[in-house]
Length: 482
Picture 1 (cartoon, rainbow, N blue to C red):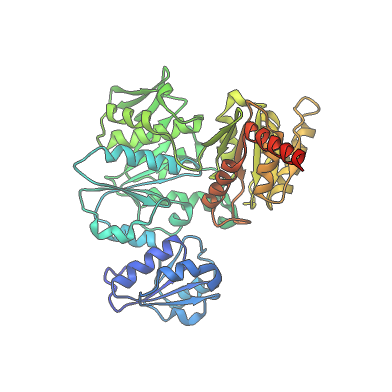
Picture 2 (cartoon, helix red, strand yellow):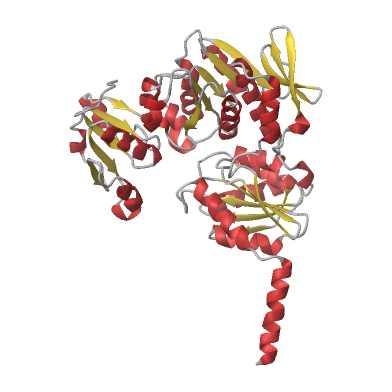
């Protein structure tokens, strides 16, 4: 790939977060930039405004073939390579690449890359916090979370660390791998994009497929699909496990997180010191510990980070407690597996969980989720396009229980706003209201973050019982005065 772009013709598909960063990067490097997006000006007013003053041509509402009069085409991760304009570029011999590919090409520092069907953001953040404790070298965290780092690539030194969360969309056509590759787990996800689980798994495998013999892969011993990836790893393989002792890596022994380093067992911290709920978060901590130990972070330093870490926004995030009811935001849960993990994260609350679920369908099986709902949920509130499908699956699970399972009341709503109002109406003290949708947000929101922020805004507006009583008293007094 070219490394200088002055006066080169560059076309960028998509004006999302990565497309915007890449557009600014290329414009500042003197490229002749065309950016094309199928959305119109009304949807992209903010983005177009941010590009004001830059020498950029914007082509909206379509991807006409004349944008392929270019030296290179960059495709944003949200756009499949199967779309006609990309196929046309390939047929013409136009080089096709991505921001992630370019960043790997230009970055001088070693890269720690993290992927997985679930847990990658928490693991990425934890690894970043552990590496930041080394004041001698700067740690940069980005990729699929935070900001794309392409605009900072010139400031990243060879002695720094770069920690990147990498999605299957970013990995799908990547021809390079990070120096340390972490896979938290591989379970069916994004089948609406990849078509088959095999294609999805193959995309994930790119995180280690192009490593060298000097590189390191960190894999989940407990997950069969992830464990099988070891066969593709050219370098050293380290493991993490919640259930078994591993040959090299981190695992749990006597309620302690330990690391096997050769013949030594190094204690890091107790499970009780982890401030995040759920067994899945133990796995995230184990993955981070394995990486941190491999690059030389001391056990005491890791323990301090683990004890102080309180999680990431939209991931089992406690929003508010109202009259004894806890409201938890898990908007990141865009697949059934993630909602199952959320429900299992609160074992002491089984039977007291009011679940808000729905969104857009990713065409994933719902059978196991439905059984978990029947076993653990007190009241199911559904919203969005996926609501009928979840309702049907839960009703089928209740029928299959042959009268031995719990009967879960179900209320279907049109919007998240209505769903929050229903949850407030049916909840009682000691209940837990959990937004963990199982579907994507794209039927009503820009992304899961916007959905989570809207949920938090709605919850923060809910009145307490005392406030309701006070308002009722004022209303009665006003009525009497009339």
